[in-house]
Image 1 (tube, rainbow, N blue to C red):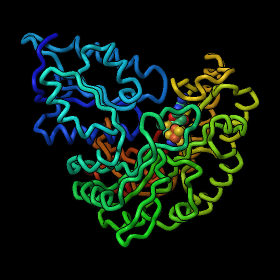
Image 2: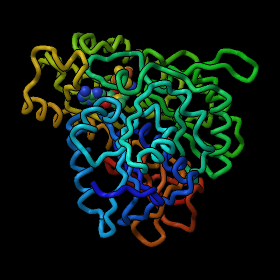
Image 3: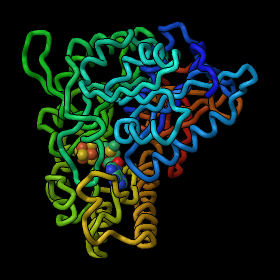
Length: 443
Ligand code: SAM
Ligand code: SF4
């Protein structure tokens, strides 16, 4: 094996959900605080962290091919080799196997252990191969450096892990039990993000609406209380949260949607399927009917709210009639956006060994039909927004001269021209709609 050098530069490559993006940012801040430089686009990095996702498909295979590519691209004229770390949920689930199969991997670090990366890097640079997949999540947040992210829209993880054990899902095994980060830490982190230019904060959690804590006066509060407190930060203009579970959607949180102006009119509330037998087999602990009633109550509190969701097609045992019930759910809710996935058996989950697994071509056909229905409703939602005036948070330059891209309160992408800067909140009128974006004119 080539000699390993102490890294001076790093790259963190994150896959999967927004929580992984957040973890990737925190790892980059941690490595930066150790004096390492982030490698530029196309540059070799001495340390590469692959921050992986295990939720679907051949995630592990992708990690192995990425490792091969990093090693192949590495310029080893001086006999050195890159330090490769596999982090995230694949590391947690398949760490031992990765160490056996991929000799170029020097570190395996689970999602709750990445605050110990600096110490691991020291050992790996000295030639050791190091694995750390310990679970206690709270220690991690306390050990990370202060936020240094400068962006108009920032993520803030408030809750981690999951106790729901949906039968298809690997998250309870890779991320561990539900924990809520303490209130004071979250207010501090939000303040830092705002001081550094964030106008919008998205609160993150695998079950973000299961967050609970104690406010500054020691009173027990839920996510609604945290949102109300964050809304008091004068320079913070927008608050969002994701992902929620239907069973944790409290009356108080629903009421907050009607009362807190800074809470944006958007709710991502996955349902997964429209058929009760499938929901029961998934261990979702809600029915199609209870989900529909819940959405009605949310819409009563905030009539213009955009609803989004997640769906799985081809769960074991899903019949044509079950799938029709899912299409019926889409017709009833009329989602402003939704994500849909083919069921992917995850090793170690109960659904992976259920009988009656669905054939690939059946899943393909169902997914196509579902996505067509979702796109139809997404376009209809965007078209219904034409003529509305609203604020857009400017996120980046567009492709054309003078063009800017930003997000409406309903999380639609809008583009317009003018003399602006990233982070500005611009009043616009929405002019024309496509399924994925709208054009706008500055008011
Ligand atoms: N906690 C959230 C919830 O319950 O809605 C979702 C977390 S999960 C990271 C995001 C989405 O991935 C799920 O809502 C589900 O649609 C999808 N998903 C999870 N496991 C899956 C599997 N085995 N196959 C296909 N999709 C899956
Ligand atoms: Fe996975 Fe279900 Fe937990 Fe969501 S609620 S993370 S789908 S087990």
